[in-house]
Image (cartoon, rainbow, N blue to C red; front, side, top):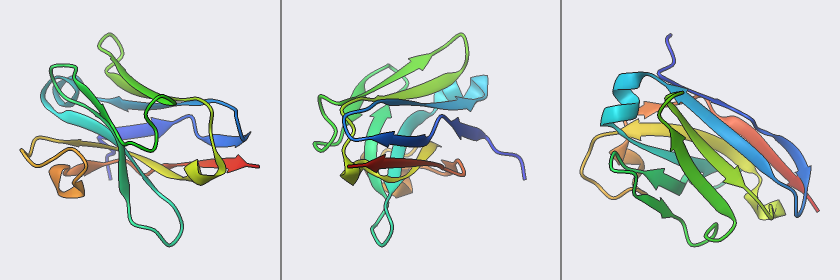
Length: 124
């Protein structure tokens, strides 16, 4: 199965550390789809972390504001999530998603393209 968005950059860090996730995609998806980061911890629902629309507007979940930064690199058709001051509660599988629905950015139904996810583990 061809992956339309491919995440990389997960890993294990201690609390207070940093990681940067990358999500590579095609030029068409990059230019025409809202792209977002979601995460899912064991036993919990998938939740929105950040989203960047086609105009470059970025939205964040309250739980990560001031610590995470999402950005896009047009030359590489790549979405990034810079995660600083990581906490144990940030531990989850992080997914990249892309979609064109008019639903709110935090709604998983907004997105019809999903990556396989990358594990982020933060130890105390």
